[in-house]
Amino acid sequence: MDRRKLLKAATLASAAAGLVACKESKESSRNNLSPCDQTTQADIEWKMVTAWPKNFPGLGTGAQFLADAITQMSGGRLTVKVFGSGELVPAFEVFDAVSAGTAQMGHSAAYYWKGKLPEAQYFGAVPFGMNANEMNAWLYHGGGLELWEKAYRPFGLKPLPVGQSGVQMGGWFNKEINSKEDIKGLVMRIPGMGGEVLSRAGGTPQALPGAELFTALQTGTIDATEWVGPYNDLAFGLYQAAQFYYYPGWHEPTACLEAMINQQAFDALPEDLQSIVEFAAMAANQNMLAEFNANNQRALNALVDEHQVELRQFPDEVLQEFKKYSADVILELSQQSKLSNEIYQSYKSFADQTQSWLKVSELAYLQAR
Ligand code: CA
Image (cartoon, rainbow, N blue to C red; front, side, top):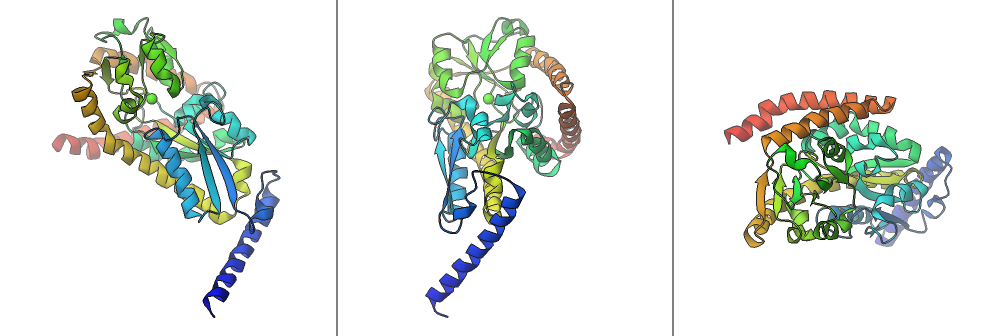
């Protein structure tokens, strides 16, 4: 058989496979996003709306990595075009846009949706909760992802973990925090459960999207803000708006970022493209953590050495205060619904177990190194 005949045979085989997959997916879902009718003729194009400026270090580049991975792994059969926050929809409308099918895919953080789905917060960041490695273990092998899917299913969304920030920084402050009294009256941008904890400690949390942080801090609308860590914060120029940079990020031991996919759009893909989306997401999840870990210390050095930022550790008294309120906030969240309690029980028992293991592995090793 010559090369042309071989190619033609391969194309026909793949077309047949595509048609079979489409037939099956059509039977399992009624949808109007289905590209199946054209699967064998035309490539599929998806839009990805994001909660970050396009190509913003770590977060925006993570979304682009995922889009590129899907496009490349599928040989262009499924191309994903990324939109920065505000380009197609504002940052905080990503969830609704993907749920409604305005875009087939989104990249954001689950705790942004706490207003409509409080349970989502477990999948974004839990104060004093699991770190990146523990989160991945829970999501992929501890039942976490199944619970996340259960939480998003009523909205017609399929969630996938796509990106871990690792332990974040405590944030940027325009005054020193020397005692728990200094938290009282503090107006700080801090989303999710961390914001609720700050509120109970006497502060006033604000939930601004990333693109509005700098101006709010510079004009004094807020006294402090957390964002991510040195790599992101340096790029944002936050050192120009605040002097003190506090650690650790008690409120976000990692931010687990998410890709959400319109379930109908996903169901309409042939099986091989569905696998590509899922494995590309897994690769992007791991890659983001590596990108943050590779760049954070270099960025921190630049902040301290070149921009004269004052690096400070939160006093123990302040961390103890936050920890006390965190336990209350998490417990109360678990009492809000049956699903919330189910997720909490799973999260808590997994966290207890992994913490015991980390004591004899990572922690013991780090102390010995
Ligand atoms: Ca953050």
